[in-house]
Amino acid sequence: MKAFDYVEIRVPAKPQYVSVIRLAISGLATRVGFLYDEIEDIKIAISEAVTNIVHHAYEDENGDIIIGCALYTDKIEIMVTDYGKSSFDFEETKLKVGPYKQSDSISQLREGGLGLFLMETLMDEVKVNNEGGVTVFMTKFVKREQVKEHVQTDET
Image (cartoon, rainbow, N blue to C red; front, side, top):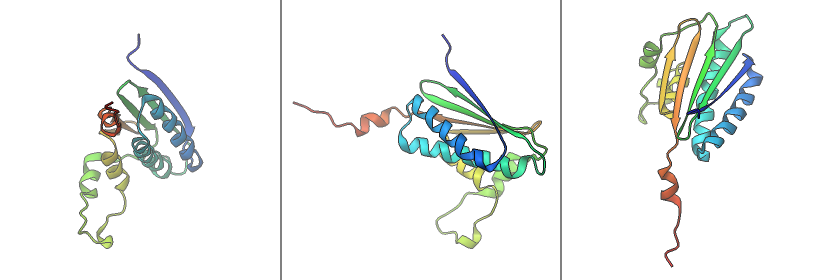
């Protein structure tokens, strides 16, 4: 028996496919057993990764986005890959991005890199490989104990 199911989606790197990917990921996350808020977090993280590819990876050429999802009983692992020419240093970009504080004024917020900040905030693990394109690996664990916290029991 396999430890996980693997689903792969390939779409053109065009803005109109971001919603298609979000919908597909939503369905897969539901299948694993995530709660509504967790699914919304996953969709935002995926949207950021895909939007970065659409805007930066291929410049004036056509290309594809490959989404690979490993579905486990307790987590989802998502790989977002492009084979574009644009690359970046994840750690360097991360240092420029945050952290943000509530006391920061809007004028102090840095443009660019916010997507990485969101991905790291909303997902449990984020890794980036930028050899031969960019691949973002994101993992989100199902927090099963949340069910116990919100379920009322009848003690009769």
